[in-house]
Length: 373
Ligand code: MUC
Ligand code: MG
Image 1 (cartoon, rainbow, N blue to C red):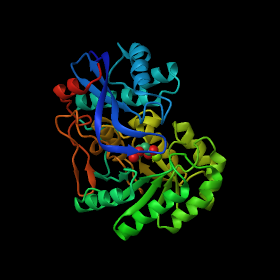
Image 2 (image 1 turned 60 degrees about the vertical axis):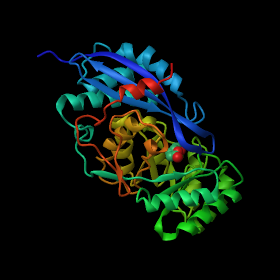
Image 3 (image 1 turned 180 degrees about the vertical axis):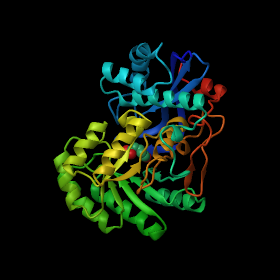
Image 4 (image 1 turned 120 degrees about the vertical axis):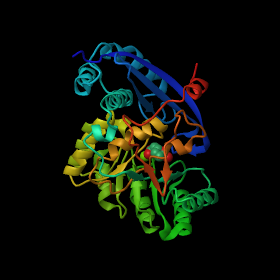
């Protein structure tokens, strides 16, 4: 029996407008840039993957342009001619020849899984062992930069039954202003919603000590990455003192980071991101480390488009516990999609596709229209 081989990898940079500016501590997004990977195999099957970051190089060490260049120049020659159905062997080849570059790896691993799922007639979640849930509750990020606008937006999401968990992006200004902003939103929403914050590493340990206390007093449920990623000991100290649980996000840039954070007792909650671990299978390794250490899980996003969002969803669907739910709302932040059928969000949940592979079909016309030339 002849085994299907990987024939080609094509990467496209796609720029899509956002529904409004999205303000984070390190960058204000006016659009999102996706790197879409099309991995073609000798049996005629194509696997699709995505690698997406936030704000060029503002968030992480890979940019859309570097992801494209590195897949084209380094990953593709390693993979072309290799068996398409042996994902372990393909990723091992990359492990042996490529350091870091987890975003690019994630696109490759996703595309291999999509192709193999299509080949075997299995959705990616089933390829990963099987789903234990059909939908994922999805948080929404309030990041307009204005308190009244954020409250209106939250009310609209509650009315639509789309979201009842809200993450507030803070950290770009004085902590006291941010705390007042968060407290006003929590007061307006009360018990109808869970309110959480993401500081995106903006505070020092000293600021975080005071601010976490005030946020806990204001009724905030979860505080994400209050201090810079590298200071694991300081994060453990802040975590020990904070009345609201601390979640590690930027602190996890690899599966090894997850292990080191777990060992240091640095955070009781981990944000899982396929891009930061190297793909939908790789992120499950971090999840399993966390589970073994008694750390709770949250399904995170790099604000991917529909391909990356559904790749994450298939992986998260297989986890036995996902106590803090997910924030897989990336496609809803964009005015346009590049899929024929867009992901389904209903009754506070993202539904996980049941068709083979990721369950996505690229809309060729839209892809051509929005791709960067
Ligand atoms: C992050 O830091 O978590 C996730 C949601 C959002 O609004 O920004 C991202 C990145
Ligand atoms: Mg975050």
